[in-house]
Amino acid sequence: MTNCIAIVSLTFALSLLSHERQAQDSSECRLVKASDLVDAQAPTFVSYPVIREKVANPKLDLNSNPVARRYRTVLRLAMPEGPNFAGHYRLVHWGCGTSCAMFAVVNLRTGRVITLKGFSAVGGVYFYADEFLPNTESDGWGFRHQSNSKLLVVVGTLLSDDVDLQQGAFYFVLEDEKLRLIHSTVVKKHCGGTKH
Image 1 (tube, helix red, strand yellow):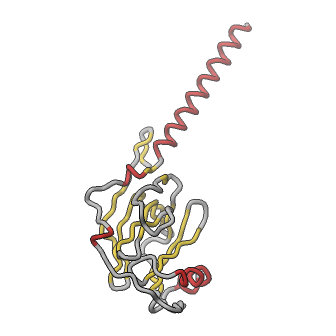
Image 2 (image 1 turned 135 degrees about the horizontal axis):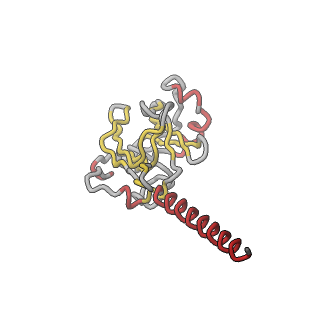
Image 3 (image 1 turned 60 degrees about the horizontal axis):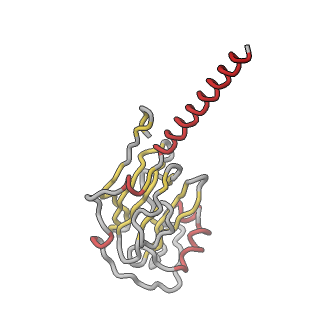
C-alpha cells in the first residue's frame, strides 16, 4: 500500500512538473523579442530626415483634438521639454493600465494635437524588445522616434476601443499633420498549436 501511494505521489508530482514546464514554454514562446521584429524591408529613420528646431513657449491648442482637452495636463507638462520627433513635434505617452500606453504628437509651433485613427493605445504585455532600434530618443517602451526624422515606430500590440488588433512593429510617417502607416512587421507566434 505504501508503494502504491509513493508511485501515485511520484506520478502526480511528475505530471505537475511537466504541466508547469509546458506552461513556462508556452509563456516563453509568447514573448516578442527584438529578433522577432527585425525586418530588412522596414523603413529607416535616415530615409525621412527633417531639421530639429527650437520652439519657445509652446502653447497647447485644446480645440485641436479631444485628446488635447482630456489629457491636457500630461501634454502641457511634456511640451516645455522640446521636440523629440520630426523637427518641431513632441511625442508624449502616458500609461493607461498594466503594460499599456496612450500617446499623442504635439506640434510645438501651433499646439495642435495629432492622434492616430483606428487605435487608441499600445499594449506591451509580451514585449521584451527594449533593444529593438536602439539610439533613438524614446525611453525604450513602445515608441521609437528621433527629433531629426519624421518616422515613428510603434512597437507592441495595437489596441482599438473594441479589440486587440495586431502585435509587432508599425512604421508611421508624419505628413500634413497626420500619421500615415507605411509599413508593418506583424509577429505571429505559434505556441502549442495556438497563434498569439
